[in-house]
Image (cartoon, rainbow, N blue to C red; front, side, top):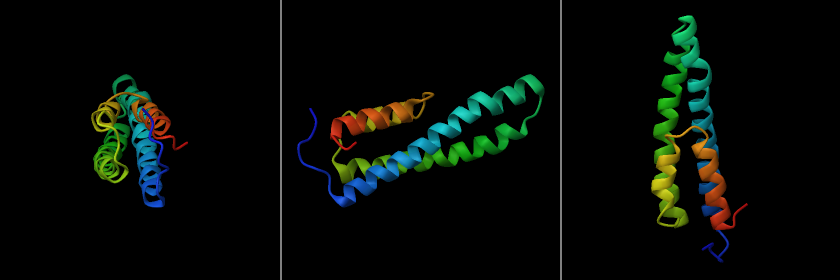
Length: 108
């Protein structure tokens, strides 16, 4: 059930940070799966996996850290933390999670 209390400025800032880091993490995962890995395994060019993979790993750790911080600051529903983590393992997961979370928080 969506909350009826509007988010504070601090909560909105946390949500915006989560959105940005989530989109960066999701994009890096799609680049890794869609470009870097095919280049490595089909054409034999491993550099894409090395660099995009490193960036994705850093963004993944940042996303989990920001998710934990935002979960406590925003008082997210109980399902949000595990679904955010699960979403980070799925292609397009962070984008879907962001949409569902904002819809649930009434914070479009």
